[in-house]
Amino acid sequence: MKKRLVSLMLSTAMLSTALVGCGSASQNTSSEGGEVATNTETNTEVATEEGTEEAVAEAEAEYVVGPENGTKLSMWVFVPAHAEFYAKMAEEWNAKNTDKPINLTVTSYPYADMHNKLTLANQSGEGAPDLCDIEIGAFPNYLQGEVQFVELNDYIEPYKEEVVQARIDTYSKDGANYGVPTHVGATVMYYNTKLLEEYGIDYTTIETWDDYTAAAEQLKEASDGKVCMTSVDTGGTDWLWLGMAQYGEDYTNEDGSPNINIESVEKMITMQQDWLNDGLAMVSPGGQVDMEEGYANIAAGNIASFPKAMWFMSRFINYMPEMEGQWAIAPCPVFEEGQPRSVGIGGTGTVVSKQSENADLASEFITWAKLSYDGELQIWNMLGFDTCNTSIWTDPAITQDTTNQYIKYFVTNPFDVLNEIKDEIGLIKVGRINPTISEVFNLTILNACLEEGADVTEQLEQGQSDCELEW
Image (cartoon, rainbow, N blue to C red; front, top):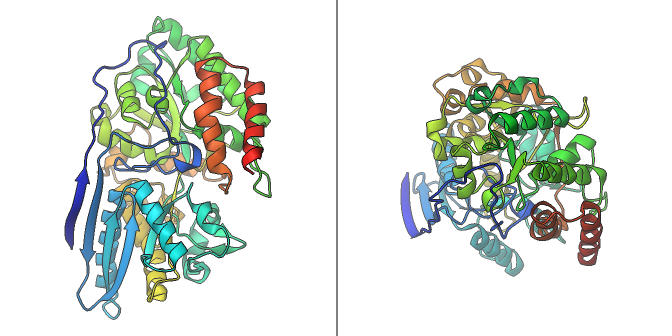
């Protein structure tokens, strides 16, 4: 395997001082929002469900894998860590398929550059790669009109019984599957057990948001207001997705039109507003926890818990290694007992272009690489994602491997939690209007309500009108 560095652009904006006290808040600096940000998967990710990690290095690198006489396949990605994964899987493919080797070239671009290049290639009818990663929030844009990707139903079929169907459906249109998923993205609560135990709080007794609020009040009193139970996001909609999943709602209708003025969203924002008013929570520095400022805030012990998808495990490994043995993973609290305790957030769908001269081989390779047991094992080992292939979840050789960096880091076993909530992972649809909805929340509603204390109902009504203008 060869790796060629094409160019490297590095910008750092590390938080030099930690925030002190639960009342501290930071101005939201995130300019990206909502589904444009769904895929905060690894420490090298550049686009997230809640924002763009501008403080992380953005690189264009090229991997070339396979023999010269192999079938030439090109691939574009926007996450360098994904490029490494595909390179590894190409090596394994060639070892297993000596009769049909591939010569794979994987090029990593910054998020916006890659998606723009793909759009132009689709519009012009030339220049598209054989394979391409597409972030979940951007995916609906490529399903408008005549889809320029190969239908993958037949290639997914061999793995369908073991794969979470909702993840396949995410990248589908009218029953046709166009994208191969990367992970489930199940949302869980992360609890700082060392911090909570210091102040006499048992997180295992928390089942509802009322329980959570009571624990927050206890924490405030015990810490003299120095520690918050959580931070709330003004630059991301993860909390809202969790609320919608718990009430079985969605902020788009069946026809894809916006419907943001709904009970679940109002209840979630109102609850967060109350926490801020009572000094139980703080606004996430940088607008959301998945930012350099957010990592520093967590590491400083300013917050004791927060909800995030399981892919956030990699953030602990890469940004907070010194906190190993302090954090537990658990199901999220609910508004009412019996509601689902999770929602799938984030994702990358890999497509095969109709422009590919070797579309059959490309389709066979990518579905094997991302959905087979062998591929999913590497997704877990290399990327730390909760895999779409559920056979990984119950294999003791994997789930009980105490040498694994993720299993070793956390107080609780990630797979124990994943199996506990496997039937409670809600799905929020991502469609054409979702980027507009995200902008309305991340640039207006959440800032107004959580930073300025604006009336939640009024903000949602205005936001609904703003979204309808774009529909």
